[in-house]
Length: 269
Image 1 (cartoon, rainbow, N blue to C red):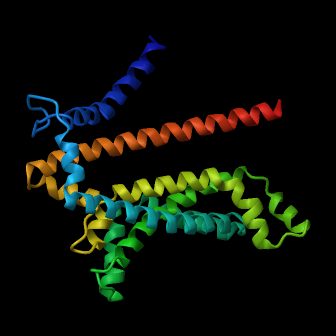
Image 2 (cartoon, rainbow, N blue to C red):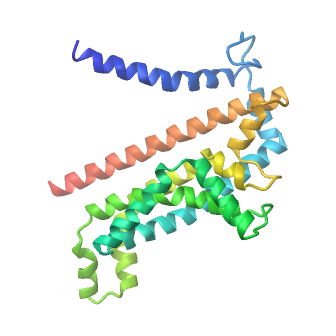
Image 3 (cartoon, one colour):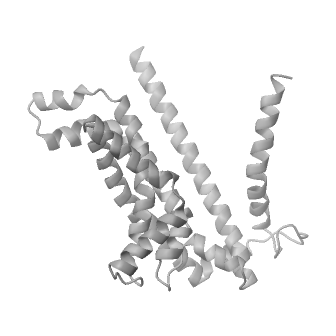
C-alpha cells in the first residue's frame, strides 16, 4: 500500500488537471455547441472557423506579437537585473531579490490597477496606445526571468568573469563571451515563461489595453458571456492548439536537456 498510494494519488491529481482539457480537445473535433452535450458527428469546422474568421486571426496574431515583444524586453531586463544583482554587494543583492519577489507574489489585479493609475491617470499616457499594455506585461514577466536566470548564475564559477578580465578581455567581452553563454538555459527558460505569462494574463491586460484590442484571455472571457456560437466553439479549437504546442515545446526542451546532460557525462567519462 505504501508503494501504491503515492502513485494512485498522483494519477488522481493528473486526472483532475488533464481530463477537462482532454474533454475540450475532443469536443473541438465535433459539431456540438455545448461541452457535455451529445456528439452527433466529428467535424473540423471549428478549426476551419478559427483560421477563416478575420476577427479571430487578428486577435491571435496581436496576442502573439504582444507576447514576443514584451517577453523579449522582459528577458533583457530580467537577465541584466540578475547579473547586476549577482555581482552586487550583499545589501544590494538582498534588496534586489526582495524587490523581484514582490511582483511574483503580488496579485495581478493590484499590478494592473497600479500601472493604470500611474501611466494613464498620473502621467496622462493615452490608453489607446500600447504603452500601458506593454509596460504592464514587461512588469509582469521580468521578475520571472530574473528568478530563472539567477540559479544559473549561482551554478556558474564565480571566478570566470575575473579570469576573462585578467586574460585581457574588456568588461563587455567578458560579459557577452563568458558570462552570457553560461546563462543560456536560464535565459531561454525565462523567455518561454515570459511568453506563457503574457499569453495567459487577463487582469493587467484588462486594465491597460486599448479599447479596440483584445488578447486571447480577454477575448475568451468576453466570448463566454455571450456572442456567436461558432466563435465559442472555435475557441475550443484554439485552446486545444495552445495545449498541443505547449506539450510539444516541453517535450523538445526536456529531450534537448537530456541529450546535453548525456553529452556532458560522456565527456567527463
